[in-house]
Structures are given as structure tokens and as C-alpha cells.
Image 1 (cartoon, helix red, strand yellow):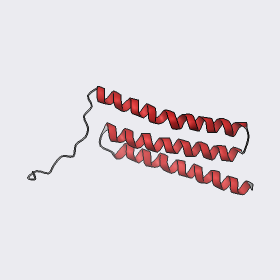
Image 2: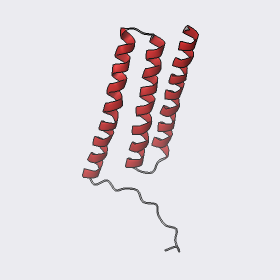
Image 3: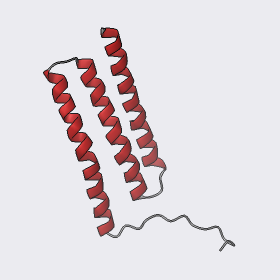
Image 4: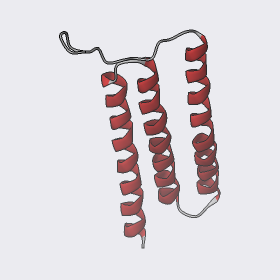
Length: 107
């Protein structure tokens, strides 16, 4: 039973690390503020949630795992809200949305 618990916890943690890595790649590769914010907002929310679920599974059924799951619920609600607030602040400050430049000679 404990082996299955450890494997499941490891899978959740690996999934969380994967989404952290993809969010970081999006942060480094996307062209403007809003697309970077979108990549990190979505990726980090899923990554933190998966990592915290993995830690709760690894901890077992006790008060610590309940606290970890409450933190996961809070983060799942707070991160998209803060990402939205930051993007609205960017709009209010006048940040331009990135537009792909057309090649010369094409209409």
C-alpha cells in the first residue's frame, strides 16, 4: 500500500515539475507581457496544485495533508485572480499587445 502511495505522490510531483518547466519556457520564449503572464499564470497554477496534491498524498491521511490541501485550494483560487489583476494593471498602464509584423512586400 505504501509503495502505491509513494508512486502516486511521485507522479503528481513529476507532473508539477513538468508544468513548472513549461511555464518557464513560456516565460522565456513568448514575445510580450500578456502572453508571458498567460503562460506563467496557467502553468504555475497547475504546477503548484499538482505538487501540493503529491505532497498531501505522500504525507498520508492526517492533519498535515488536510492543511496542504487547504493551501492547494487557496493557491488554485488566488493565482488566477492575481494574474488577472496584474494583466489589468498592464492594460491600465498602456502596455501594447504584441502584433506580428508582416513581411515586406505582402499586403
